[in-house]
Length: 571
Ligand SMILES: Nc1nc2c(ncn2[C@@H]2O[C@H](COP(=O)(O)OP(=O)(O)OP(=O)(O)O)[C@@H](O)[C@H]2O)c(=O)[nH]1
Image 1: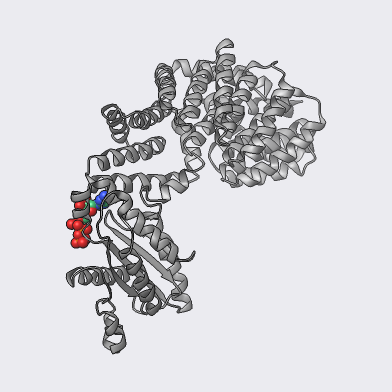
Image 2: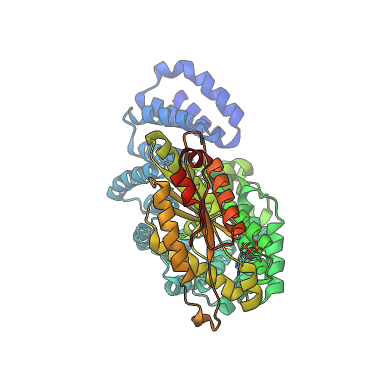
């Protein structure tokens, strides 16, 4: 009918000429009263695509719900569900996306269209990857491979790659290396050079994780060369960062510095953050080896702040759009092939070929089973499962870094403020660390720092937050702890530190710490004034001859002599 053909036209326009599509939607709107419910469902579904293009996920969700309620046929229903998944991904509601996919899969499994099944499974893999549900990924990968049986080479190629990625993320590094080798061979044979490069890199990653740095090196170098042909910058920069780290472990410091510096010099845009985070980590290590502690500390702080930025879920979408900016002929050809292979929407193929940019976007957003595959892959490769922990911790002592730790402490303080409960802070600093470094070497200085932290870790409990405030200073934040309790704990801490046995190092030297204490008063609106007072206490402790704790709380000191007494040096 006339309406059906107009809906068909709208379908095409949505991928070729968005402004015109919008005007067609407007012109059809007043006539929807004459539509059959099937046509109306189709119309609403198409409207949702427009909303998706413009990033209006809420509106898309609403019209899709309406379309679903109109009892559409099976084919349209599948389409509606897939768009709903896209909406959920767009809204960052991955759990929901996952449930919708499961629902849809159950429906699809009852049907017998193997192609649709494989595409849906691949799509499900995206979401699993994003949810870091690697075990589930393995199950679904096996289903992809079982259904596809090598029929669709592209799906097979991706399936094999996914299998390797899941193994890598599950820390099955040996298996991962083997699977990456196989996916590399297969994809090479069937002409998917970009996936070959990813497989080569994946293999290098698996070897890298096993600390087989000499074996990992050639893989990073050769995949770098391949990515360079594609101008695939995201991967190029990522490889530089891995090369920096690999060279560092191989003791080739000049090369490590060179690659790390290249990455550190990159613009601070979304897609560079992960490599930059890694590169600053390496620069921190290099600076530390050169005994440039201030620089090392600064690099570490930068690295940690970048990690924090990465935690933002939005990076996935932004990565997608960064990627979409690569207007490289090679890449476009590759994408066209992907789009063809993954063209769930059959007839739209010819339009996709006419209109590259829209097809690009279309494939990114909808036929996402293809391009999203490697976008998400890039994102997940950028987000090692343990990186969150690493980023939050000081590398030497394992305590929280300042950035993370102080945020946590600040949150705790707010809770104490609302409950009017106690909150104490201890700042401490190893005495004469400079001298220990100079006399017994930096390694022993490091060792001393670690021992001191070990001692304190034994004395504190879960609710306490221990963090490295700067290269020299540590802070202990203690909710629901009265200053007298804090002082008692500090006294014990100082005693135990003083009795640390240093013979194991081959030297005999004294380790002591000085500490400043302070606690929350009703006047304090944040941690800052409390920390400043503790710092004054620490300064006083140093001035009074070190190896002692000083409580600095002017308000309380004025109020009671007992508190002032606590400020007296430990005997
Ligand atoms: N080994 C080692 N030394 C460090 C680390 N971080 C900082 N340092 C060194 O610690 C020293 C601190 O020097 P100062 O601020 O003069 O303090 P100090 O020698 O500890 O003397 P006081 O704090 O006054 O007792 C500097 O020489 C830094 O290079 C580290 O992670 N490991």
